[in-house]
Amino acid sequence: MVTESVHAVLETSTLFPGEVDSFYRKSPVMQAYFSNVLQSEERLFPGDRFLDKDVQVLTGSFGDLNKLSHDDLEGALDSDIYLVFGSSFIKGWLIKFLIERQAINIHMGLSPYYRGAACNFWAVHDERPSFVGATVHRLSEGLDSGPILFHSRPSYDGENPFDFTMKAVDQVQRDIVGTIENGKLLSFPSFSQDPSEEIRYSTKADFTDEVAEEFLRKTPDSRQMRDMLERGPIPNLVFANDE
Image 1: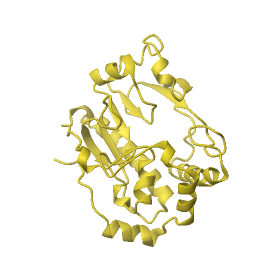
Image 2: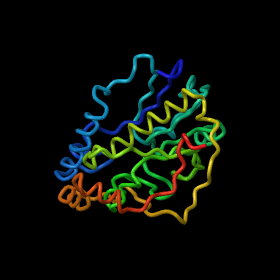
Image 3: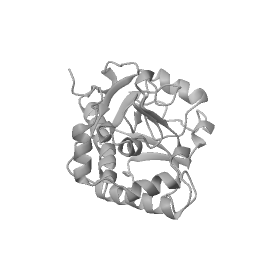
Image 4: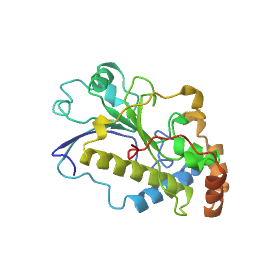
């Protein structure tokens, strides 16, 4: 661990997406799609089902975050660093508190190009795997719209698209840990996002059975992925090691 203590507030849905009705609907197609996602999780994060015993955890259902009071979060509200990753939309007193504390959001997608839900899926779907990655930015009241600190992007080593997009999750976590260790995370200059550069704003409703089924049928192989990476557009990004 890179800190003396950690408070984690977790919003849960299900461990079996596609098999159980939750954030994504239950269907044979969704079950087939998410079985690939879960296999990639196992390959990239083996044995990581349980948190470290020193992490203090508060767990609730997805969407419960905005019902929590100051008292519910006592202890966690006196932190040096606040990170938000994959939460429901934060509102009310909590979003104002986090913004005042310069909280940082990790968005799985390269903003401002891809915003919303399942951004890295859509980047590959759109034949733009060079836009697979993550954005580390200041938390704001808008969705994935805060000033950017840096981007994170995985290298491609012949993985299938599921492993490649999961690799983006691993890479941004490594980048975050590295910037905490070197003390730079809270001192990066920030850059406003340009909405005119947006390629796609995706919602959960856009990810239908038909979309998932087509992707499973036409999942690009390593040759196709390399070809798309070589001939595709290159996003203008800011990296943590840029001077």
